Amino acid sequence: MACKSGVSQRIQEIENPELATQRTRTLYKAKGYTDDDWIEKCLRGISICDELTDQWQKRDVKEQREYEILTAEISKAAFGMTPSLYKKYKDLKKENLRDHFTDLELIFSMLSEASTKEITINKRVQGFLENKKPLLRVELLRAMPGEN
Image (cartoon, rainbow, N blue to C red):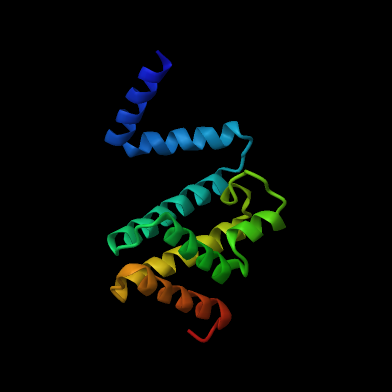
């Protein structure tokens, strides 16, 4: 019976996405996260990441490995290391890296992903190799504060 109610809940969430957001907030609180501002930043970060991956999909990034490479490049631009190295740095095993970000890390992540998305759209890039180029611009934004 629980499976049937879970399906019904997902259908309701498709019809009203705010229900999914509320469920996710509840899950974060159940995991022990108490800072509502942090939860909101995390949810916004997830949304920005989804928008970026939607753009990549529209622009012929198809393989899981391509997404992993592009994501690693964004992480290197934002934090100076890949997600796998960052997880080791934070001594995480199977935990979600984003769930262990500070406020500033969430903001840097959102900025990097949103910048990449905007550059991708504005430059009308197509395919995996072309989608790597905006990441270089994000790296330049990080390297040259105040000069942009």
